[in-house]
Length: 300
Image (cartoon, rainbow, N blue to C red; front, top):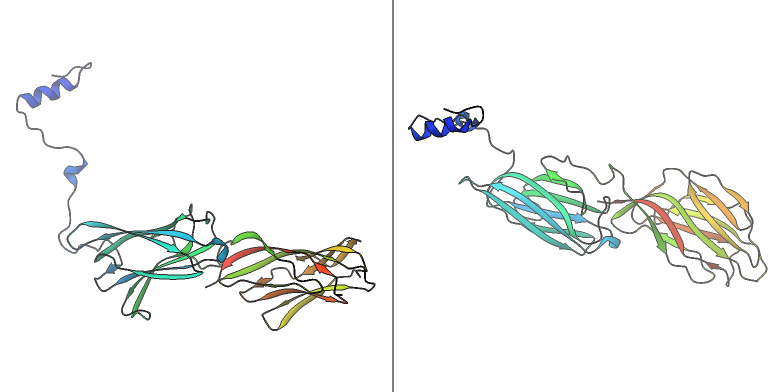
């Protein structure tokens, strides 16, 4: 018999004497249904099905390597891990993979190589398809979300997110100076959409006498839908820094700085343009590089 100081002695004695020792842990109460068993997943992949890995990635974030991981319960009861590592070096990327037949239990994706360690730069889609590509009969989206090295969306836990639903990637984009005597022209790159915040550039006037006055125009690639002008008249030999800022009013605070107001909440799709229109610009006048502050989203 066990004692207060050695309770295990009674257990050992009972075992040695052949006393019955029926299991008493939780396992003795577990049973499995053999009829009307609910499937473990709402998604079943057949041998004819494939999974499509698709990404939209801006040029600045390329190249990246993306890992997709899945777990599939096969008809024989074995859970099979599936893993695909895809090198993405184009802005619009898509590849088809074959997986085991069975119930899809889970899926996840993340960046394992590249400069994407923040959300808002690489938009990822994982879709189970049935039928002939590129127009399959059935498409079942599993994951639709941004991915990074630290953010890992999973199916079936993470709900789908459209590219513009949550906050984008805030960054400064630098554009080269134009030739002397020319205005600058900024075009929103392919595969992205910008929520415009600000633009900074300086104009240095040559020694040639004359007045210059700056406007900033915004168009959709052809049609100007916004044009705001500076209240400052720039003369020979002056260098003035111009700030085109969303939500501010136009002003000329001092002789070397000028603010041009832009509409608040200005959103620019791929191919939209922002340009300077300098009345009276002369051959020796020089615009500097342009620094544009944006919140960037992936465009589908």
